[in-house]
Image 1 (cartoon, rainbow, N blue to C red):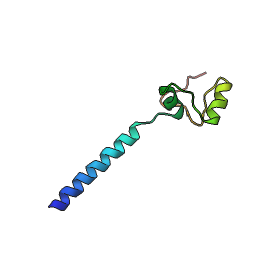
Image 2: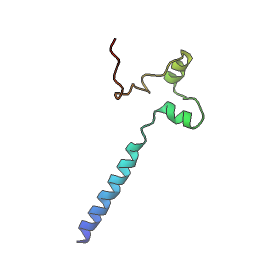
Image 3: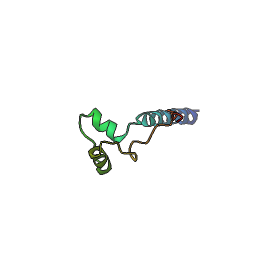
Length: 69
């Protein structure tokens, strides 16, 4: 009986830790901006010089549908 309780507690702890690890889906640029800094990645710095955002680190969200032309 103690083994079952231990297994349930361990499983719950693992699920709790996994849930919190997926909650932080911020990109490198969003994390740097939250700290009040610019992103230090070379690809992001190059894109910023061109007035764009890095597509590699900041992929487009699928939630927005493209408008028909």
